[in-house]
Amino acid sequence: MSAAQPTVKQIWQWLEQIPDPEIPVISIVDLGVVRDVCLQGNNVNVVITPTYSGCPAMREIAESITTELTDHGIEHFNLETRIAPAWTTDWMSDEGRTKLEAYGIATPQANGGPKHCPQCKSTTVEKISQFGSTPCKAQWRCLDCLEPFEYFKCI
Amino acid sequence: MAQDDPQLYEFLLRQGDNSLVLGHRTSEWCGHAPALEEDIALANTALDLIGQTQLWLAYAADVEGHGRSNNDLAYLRDVYDFRNVLMVEVPNEDFGRTMVRQFLFDAFQVPWLTALQSSSDQRVADIAHKSLKEALYHLERSTDTVVALGDGTELSNRRMQAALNYLWPYTGELFGQDDTDKAMQERGVAPLPASLRESWNATVVNTLAAATLKTPDDPFAHSGGRNGVRHTEHLGHMLATMQVLQRSYPGAQW
Image (cartoon, rainbow over all chains, first blue to last red; front, side):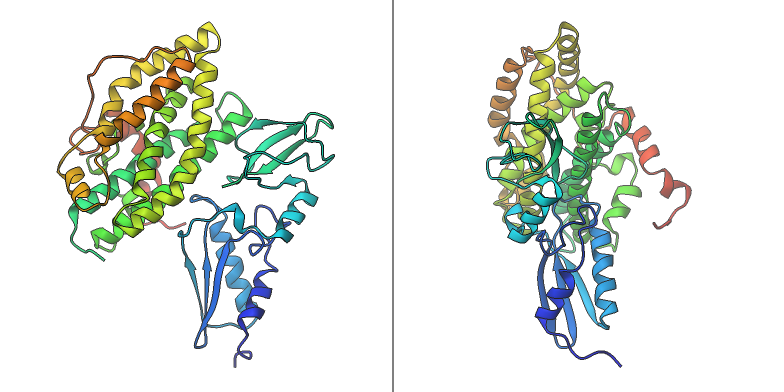
């Protein structure tokens, strides 16, 4: 006996509870990885997209979604990976940006560099390396408080 | 879905094998790069390339229609089935050659993927659009590194020039033209690679000048990789490492 049919809104709320495996301070919904949720009869279809084409977290994200849906009694669901339209940092939610900044990761900016140091807010910053601990981040340093920090690349 | 389209299959293998072989070569630096930041950058570049490979070879496998997967194509083919250009399979040698190669490749990939975004084949256009974002970022880094090391010390300049002289005869193959290329052009899938030569030249000549490196003028070009006629001796050794698990335990699954 399965649970009552959930609404699309409820499913989104469940998915909002799933942390990104590499940046657990934000959810996979905040990150813009979940693109669509729809119901077809009693089947739930969830569409996800990778941030970077080689993102190693995709499998874990798919497993987390499977666990979340199963825990809520969903028996029939389908996970679809779609690469078009290609993921962009524009899809990151405002809430996600606020959480990233509070966590110490500078948010993506259209000009390609951080707005300011996430620690002391100084605008005197310099790039250390174009790549960081995950494909989506670069390494920067604050020249005032001297803290190194990560910047979420803008793509 | 086309089930019998050997030319599209060939075209897709060329895209996938270029990124697979360069991705694997680049990954060989993991844990060995001259600085931690470079190690991370090389590993991330390799990861992007392998990710792009998954997309290209998944499409190739669908077009082939024999029930094979992208993993099957990567791990269960031998040297003569590979369709990458020779430039991506030659050994890394040193950090200089690795970065010069990355730059010469990126300078081609950026205009190439840009053009493929308007492919008549929607799946090709989608993969190109996704990959281009990464290729632009790679080009930015490889350009900066080539300039920094070319216009660096006497030693770094000498090693970058040696790398460039070694790699130069391999660049011509990027612009090769055969029946597959012509068929792709006629169907609007891809432009002729040769049509990008001017754009590639401009990028390369400008960057090499900024790097105080001398652009070689020898027009000789090695070929045989993208049509599978004659790979270098190096690819087999690379595949022996890359495919060791499937060779030792056929059908093993993660």
